[in-house]
Length: 456
Image (cartoon, rainbow, N blue to C red; front, side):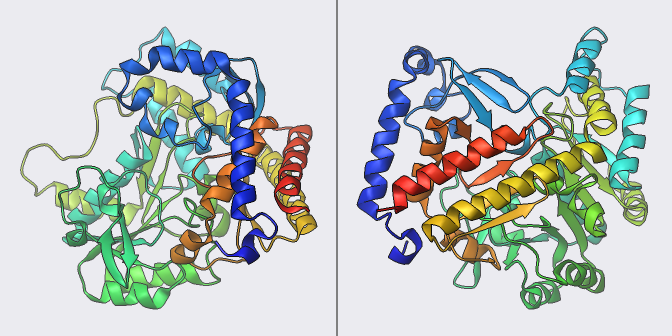
């Protein structure tokens, strides 16, 4: 990180601020710390999912209650929540229609491995919101992407997936790759990795159609799997014509185009694809699609469905490698119908967009006040501040734009001032339940933290 990017916030100043804020956080949460110490022995790494320890705080905040756009921790602190489960609760914690659906379904059965009339209603709602495709319901977007890739390989007879440097597609093995010196390599840090991922994946740079065409020319790519916007490092917007170019290249080279909207569902009703007129062969999304109930969906166009039907008629009997026992269970279906019909509405998206625009403007002004050469990016209800000049063009630039120590200090400072944003990157979401007062408190807290870090 160059001195220009951090201005007056030198490394020593950042470290001192972070240490002081960590001490404030720890002192304010004796009950959380004691409970963690008492219960940690039951879990690998002390928590039920290892990344719960990857937040910048000295120890995790134990949540006692989450409702709307607010979290209350075990020590009684009420926090404005802009993380919202990293999109899982993008429409707020426990939206009322979803809570009612859960209560009603609980008396009718939780899992059956059989469809219901409600499942058929879910299919109709999916076509209404996302477009006329042939749909399947999974439990996570990782699963949905895995299944979509199996189908793509089946109908094309090709082995590889093309992904973009810095992409996010859950924990699909095939996508755990990156560019290094112009070569596709496995990402560092993968646990227990034994398969050579370069045999099943190739990487191009986002917004670089020439590199995509080179990769497709080899004739071994079954599918391009992409987010409409790179989201899991620093957000990178598509250049004008990029998505149209992807569609054209995929068609000309016989590859399927899979668009994963697990994060960009923030863009509006129907996701980025519907808002911007994209035309994927396969569409995937998850996280918030059932109001926070673990659910994902994937759909294929009618031509792809016909190709798969022809393939399926010829394959030997046996396990397809697609589907899990709890996928499309009645509770998922109930929550999916409630979300699609009563939560994922144009009115709610309009409210979310207006709040996100307010937040984006406020953060931009706070950055300008301290003279930091940073920028703010917004995709619908999703907002990020990026500690580098913009716009960013690809995943390599996004990775280089991160300032880990500075960002961790800002996150900790915001939480101590009552505002939670997403870990791992600088993402904030606006839900239908988020108020202008909450947004203004976040902007004020952000400005206060920057003032302590930058101003002399």
